[in-house]
Amino acid sequence: MKILVTIARVFTGVLFIFSGLVKAIDPKGLAYKMQEFFEAWSNAGFLPSLMHFFDAHALAFSIIMITVEVFVGVALLLGWQKKISIWILLLLMLLFTFLTSYVLFSGKIRACGCFGDCIPLTPIQTFTKDIVLLVLVLFLLFNQKYITPILKPIVSTFLVLLATAMVLFLQWYVLKNLPLVDCLPYKPGNNILELRKMPENAVQDKFEYSFVYEKDGVKKEFKSSADSSWKFVERKQTLVQKGSNNVPIINDFSLTTESGNDSTEAILSTANDYYLMYIKDLEGYPKNWNGDANFIAKTIATNKKLYIVTSQVDKVKEHLKNIKDIQAIQFLSCDATVMKTVARVNPTLYLMHGAVVKQKWSWASFNTLQ
Image (cartoon, rainbow, N blue to C red; front, top):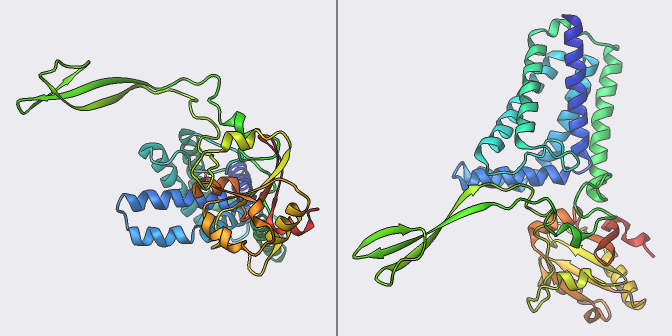
């Protein structure tokens, strides 16, 4: 029995550490996923005020969740405070199993983000994983007498606290800079225009259509149009066969000029290098920082092409109005939700060559760029 407990203990501990670290390289990704849940429950009428509060503090919840995962994973491996650690694990698994079952059975959320963007899992895969882990945690709970510490208490305490401090530092670092491992569609080397295309092996959804007409107060459904004595009411669309792989990897990215023209294709087809500076909004902007103005001024002075992309064009233009010759810079609008993926840090600078992302930097690196 002790061997089985050890195997379950090591497997569960390592998986929790891995799960936490995969998400720690991009804590905002988990925060945005949490917001999807909060918004779905709010829209369903479940404690909307509380859900709005949770939504506003999603990043804090994300950091706490990631840190707790690594904390209990290390504690379990070391056998440190086993009762507390296993009970925390059980509570986490009950929560995770509820969330993944909601994703699987409600269909309102596409994925749970259990391993972040780097290891995407289908809803059935994540639900199955959580059921297996829940069984393992229950097994450890009822057999915790076989779990023994592998180090002296003071050493184990030090290692647990060190691991906690390190994962907190990692999250602080990537929130100021960019994810250490970029698994998003806009990572360097990717061609945005190519990723906007439909996959070659896409299978489209198949629909059947019917038409509702009315005559003498009676409505009737037809497979095709009725004669002129009937008045058309509506057309119905029924899904008869679900397609597969029929959504482009990038399906919502667009760059719109101030006059309302979609310039995505034209800009991403630029032959030479150019910059895209993404400013999501000014609410979470770095305080007492002028790196954006300095970089824009240098870019104008060297005649390099730069576009400023934002979801708040008027506010950002006002913010940058004192830059000399700022009228030489074109401002473009982009959806705020899309900007969450494009620019994990606000602001973020892209060096582009045509539609290919050559490099990207967070605001913390602006002053070091030549």
